[in-house]
Length: 493
Image 1 (cartoon, rainbow, N blue to C red):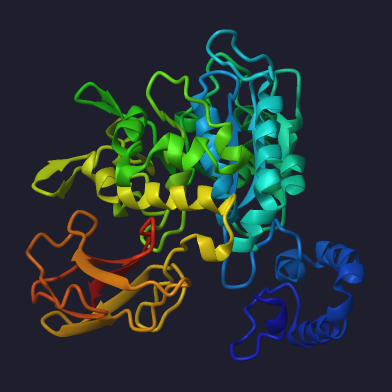
Image 2 (spheres, rainbow, N blue to C red):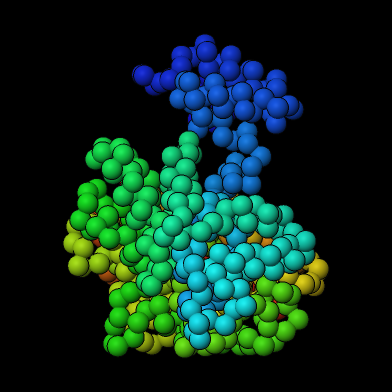
C-alpha cells in the first residue's frame, strides 16, 4: 500500500493488517505534513516502521537512487563478474553501464583477485580495479549522459556498490545478504558471468551462510527472493537443496548444432544494423567506449550481455515469462530440470523463411545494436545531436507493461497506438504482428491494418484456453533508427 493511501480508503482493511484504520489514517496525515522535511524525519520513520512492520509502506518517500519512482518500478539487480579473465566481461560491462539507468543496481561483485597474464591485457591487474576503471570512465561520460536521461545513476553511487568477491573477502556476501533482507518487496535478479578459476560465487557463499545460521525455513524465505538470469555457479543450491529458485533463466546454454549459445551473440549482433566498432565505439565516443577490449576469441564476444539484455524493459518482454521473447532471445523449460522453473535457450522462432533458435535473437539484433550505438553517442553528443527511442502508447496505456485483454472469441478487437510519439520529432512506422511462438493458439490469426497506428484482429472462435500474442513494433526514422515495442496478450473471457 502506498504512503498516500495508508488509510485504506476505498477498500476494507484486511484481517490481521499491521495497524487498524484509525492509526493508519493518523500516520498518513503525519507523513503528509512532514513531506517537505522527509530528509530529516526519514530515519525516524524507518525506525517506527521497523517496530510495526510497515517499512515497505514508507519506501516511496526515499529519494535514494536505489529506489524507483512511483509507477516505474525497476528490477533490482546484481552482477557477479570474473573481470580480469576473458576480456569479454569488460565488453559486456561497457554495454551494461550504458544501460545502468534501466535497473536499481544493488551490487557489482568482482571475483578475480589477480588478472590472468596473457589472456587479459588491462593495465589494472585486479578484477575490482578493472571494473572500477570502467565505472570511472562512465563517470567521465556521466554529465553528457544526463543530458539524454536524468535517471542515469551517479558514478559514485555505482562505485559504492562495486565490491570484491575474492575468496578472502566477505564484501560480496554481505552486500547480497543485506539486499535480500532489505524491506523492499521487489526480488533480486542475480547475474553470474562466470567464476571458473576465481573465487567461488558470493551468492553460493551467502546461501551457505543463511542455511547454516537460519535453518531450512529461514533459508527458504531468503532464497525465494532471488531470481537468476545467469550461469550456474551456485553448487547444490541450484538443483539439490529445496526450495528451488523462483526462476532461473540460463542465458548461456545449451549448445545446439555444435554452437554455444553465449558465443552466438557475437556472430548475430556484432555488425547488425551496420554497426562498426571503430566508427561507433572506439573512436570519438568517449572514454567508456574506448575501453572496450578487442582481444577476445570472437570479435565483440560479449558472452555475458544476454544475461542483462534479457532484463531490459523494451515493452516487449516480461522476465517472468522467458518464452515470450526479449533482446536475449526466447527460453524454454530445461528438460534436465523437469518440474522446476528453470529455462534455457532452446526455443526456435520462424523468421524470414527459416526456423531456428537463433531467429529469436536475429529478429531483434538490429534493434538492440542500434540502441547500443545510440547510447554510445549519448556519451559525447548533445540531446539534439542524437536519436532517442520512441514512446509507445498502447490503447491509451503509457509505459512498457504487457497489456492483457480478456475477449469474446469470434469478435473483432481494435488496438491503437495513437498518441505514440518520438522525442526528436522523427516519423514513426508501425508493425502489428502475431508472435505465434510466444502464444499457444495453433491456428492462423491475421492482423488487419498491420502497418497503421490502429489495427484490428478477429479472435478465433476456437480460442478456448489458448493465448494469442500481438507484438507492436514502433520504429523511428532517426539515425540510427530506434525501436520500442508493446505486447498484447489475448485470452478468452
